[in-house]
Image 1 (cartoon, rainbow over the protein chains, first blue to last red):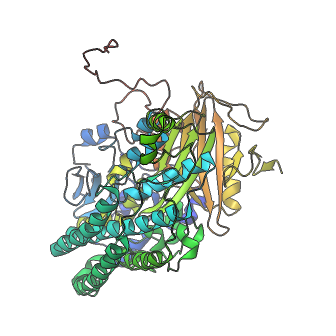
Image 2: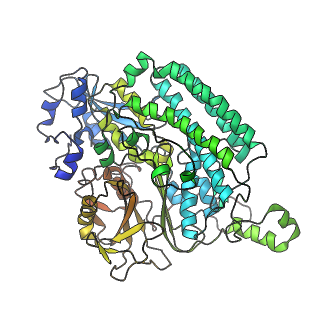
Image 3: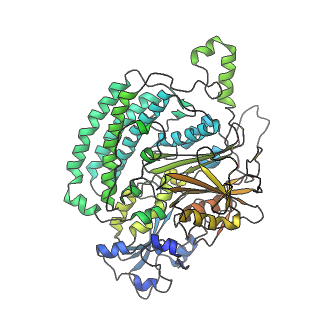
Length: 457
Length: 162
């Protein structure tokens, strides 16, 4: 068994309150079995919560680590096909009885080389690729990609396009968090919640379908603007959505928030503090649950977030309950932003009138040969982007979603890298689960809310 | 100012909204530690680029000699709301660089991914194994000379049957 065997320097130790045990002292630190008291649970945050064991080693042990001090020690495989692992997450768990000691998220089951694929797609096609990464919030992927490409191009989307982007992204945050409400409920046995969450989410997706033509994987936000203008009656649709969802959120409160069973299952489970979250690279609701108010929409305003009024929701205990409450209230804040956008939406272009990046309008193609050639060129060859590198980040429902683009001056990116919040947030999992029960582990996975599409890319 | 945290500051400053420094490879960790001490409290991202087939000007400062690989890290200072990008040149014949794990344990997965995809070894990393590809995979897919494989396309008139 390989434990962390290096001395932690002062810098890392400050992030991890408990000292890292050496390989020899670890077995004695293990509990005799059964659940740990709350205070003990919080103190077991040493880096050795991470199980660093290869497949070959695990196979050699065969599920029985043979520890003379602990005859309840087992190595358990959970997933990749498991109802509570959100897709194809697999966990290697080291258990003492029902208590999780160390764990290792095993990922890559959904890896299809999307970053490599991105190198052979033009900037207009790139959106179709990145949108499939975080499939629960596809518009954010497109937005980050488009912002990075626009930074390289040195162009800026027109005002109306920017407001449309904001509207769509905030609605997407609503649908993504509703999905979380559904799965979080299901994972913890509140199965009716699953139906309700999906039901409300479907209403939002119905609006997306009307605007973009697709429920998911829209490729709607593109470098230079958006693919199409909003339908004429969008204001009514969005107002209806807000009217529909807001009272349902109050129903969720009745169903879950105040419920003693719900609280019992989530409060004090999967605790993390700010220093640990920062050290592990965690962002989004995971970081905010520790009480740190950091939201790119407010702290590094992009689009027109500095012109709308909203609150950044923070927790105080850093547990699963805080992360549930943060997401529930972020839906409310997003709806608040959306209703301001209804008022603020200006008239104008939905994409930049720059012949370099924008195809000519449909009517012009019928009338002008040049327009037809131009249209053909943009969709076959794409447009050339000046050489350089750029990083653009947006606040996705899961945290900081960044896209790092390197261009060599051709029509396809030289390198597309996506800083996927789920990928980085997943590192906190062993630390959140250590010392808890397996059943709590399910709550923890759910509250980290990983989307495996963007973890594996 | 041409130096910051003991590293050369980027030629174009700031580069599309963000500050860039180019630490030498052997000073990678020191530069990161200096930045951390100066308030850059979180490592957000770490990745690499293989410049093997890059045809344009790399736009590096005069003091920085271009190499095949570049390791890129994104840091953030929450207090100042400031970002910093570190770019280190890593030669093809010795693709190693020191790990940032001791400064930010969150570098673990990111560095494993860079090793998996580019074959760049992070010295001192607690778990230098692959993360996305199967353990027994050979080759590093995001390298530019990695053969991507093809699916044969059957067109009647296709002359380039692969």
